[in-house]
Image 1 (cartoon, helix red, strand yellow):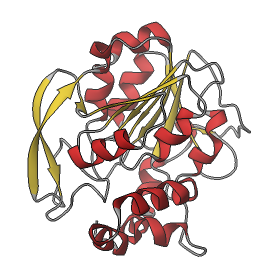
Image 2: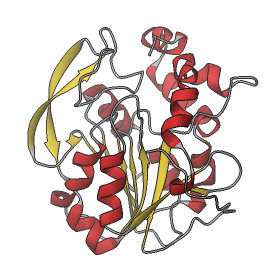
Image 3: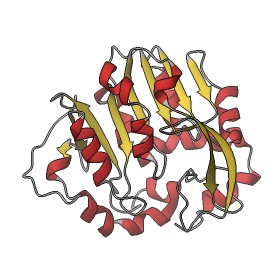
Image 4: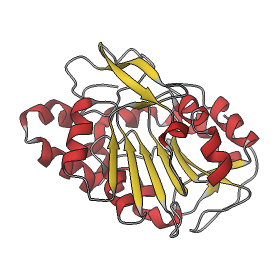
Length: 268
């Protein structure tokens, strides 16, 4: 991924302005967020935002769930989230994983977290690291969890393994960013299928079963879109829709919006 104009300008702009702008335009970048009612049940007691960044999911979840718990490992971003959070939001400065302790969080050189690509899994875009604390979702003592969003750039399976007890007890909906260019997605899909979760994607106006959508081939074909950055991708003519997130629902549940069934020809 190349450095985007927004990421280069962010250090020179008031951080609250950058955060507010990112939250405002994000539903155009990730249209699933604009249809949150189809993902997060109206009866949701606790929603969890793993990888909070500037808070586009945290803010909107706070209007729908009684409580939101946001887990963000970048100290600067966690402080920003906590300072402006609604009263029903609790921010935890840590990385979610499959065991407590400490780990190295990797970021691009010169990036303070603005690009939203920090990860416990080092890639070629990463040039520096900082030590962060790790927590498991199971150890947080959460109750009545109805929805979990996970955006961790490669350590999705570790986050899910650290929430196995919670998933078995509360059966929350899961919204997981899966990028074939970062990590193979099959282990996550297989793990969740063993827990009786089924995946759904939103390539257009209707939800499509993941089993009938060639996610790997789609991402390979549309990978060039990733380098355009957030602002260029939300402007008119910003290019094709790049699908990189999957809604996982348990026990045969289906999304609340329109559903279009396809044949099973997916490439995982």
